[in-house]
Amino acid sequence: MPLARVHNIAVSLDGFATGEGQSREAPFGHAGTRLMEWFFPTATFQGLSGDRERQAVDPASGPDDAFARRAWEGIGAEIMGAGKFGPPGWQRDPEWRGWWGDEPPFHTPVLVLTHEPRPPLELGETTFHFAAVEPREALDRAFELAGGLDVRLGGGPSSIREFMAAGLVDLLHVVQVPVLLGRGVSLWSGLEGWERDYEVESTSTPSGVTHLVFTRR
Amino acid sequence: MPLARVHNIAVSLDGFATGEGQSREAPFGHAGTRLMEWFFPTATFQGLSGDRERQAVDPASGPDDAFARRAWEGIGAEIMGAGKFGPPGWQRDPEWRGWWGDEPPFHTPVLVLTHEPRPPLELGETTFHFAAVEPREALDRAFELAGGLDVRLGGGPSSIREFMAAGLVDLLHVVQVPVLLGRGVSLWSGLEGWERDYEVESTSTPSGVTHLVFTRR
Image (tube, rainbow over all chains, first blue to last red; front, side):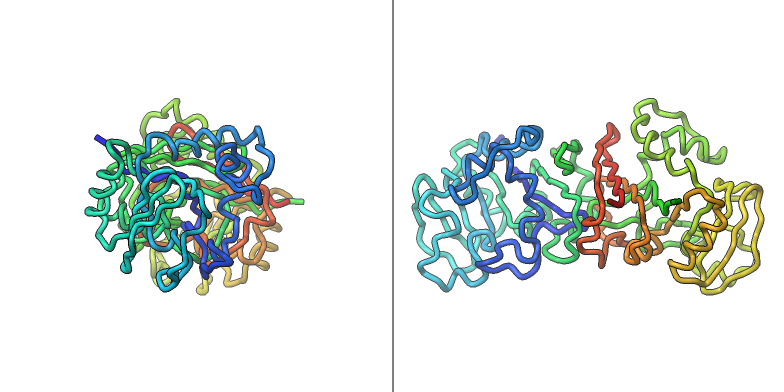
């Protein structure tokens, strides 16, 4: 059975997976890059990133990379929330084609959940589909697009939380980052006891983060 | 210089260090024992606990015990908030002598912060002092009582958060427990960026928890 998987979602100690005040200039709001510093020096990020963001791969990032790279293994499609595809209001900009330029890093179909669908958009090896559907139906459609492979739930946090609340997440990989953001979008709110249906493995790495992998029993 | 140290404060993924609805029957509110399961099988807890709570020490709890036992090393006094000394309203019960019976596990002076102070109470090797003072003054008094040793900030979470906000914590040992409580008393609220003045070390253990130790730079 193909799985619905979440990978590399970074969360602060106070539970925020992105900051407050997201905009075109500040995709993560006031959080800036505070949740992502562990990711930048990994081979996985450096393989994905454009020239502007390129830096040296830090060999000490190996353990983090071992987790990070799983996000691209065995995935046939991604589902993302409207908040990941663009800054607030992108639906009113017919020219908006996502953050990622002409060759987005997905290389699979991507289903964007939005109340204002538009025709499919093909960019390089990625085709974005747009639909106003609930999580259960979104997952059915994404499994069809994935052709027998797994589906990645790509975020943002509000979208992932909806799939968690609906019991639709088979694997959740969270990166706990030891910073306090104070405010933002919580990954965890309204999910008391969610962990009960899952096995959890915790692994701290030299970068100071902790990888938590929840796998459905 | 003696230090102000926090040890063994367990926090859920959503940031709660105790539950909602604390009472004499439910000292941790709706959280029950969910934040403490890692602690019960340690040699440290079994050495402290009364006969009723005694169970076998689990050898796999060794790494957790290595962190847990530090809470009793080099400590000359403890400061605790009113919420740790008793259930809501204990100030109106002149017979209330704390949760711990005739031989409390502190074996040092303990300064209880309460708006309704009472005379000192001696129980076994522990003497409870009661004072209505702010964190800075409380710490000065506790250092005097500690006779050159460190002071443990013993909780509850609201009390610890006040000392954190006032910049008075030299070492903070948090045990991140992979459960979601949904509600309760947050350790982290109002502390954006608090980690910037600290080095942090993260260590996951076989029990599934992660020990985070923040040490002031």
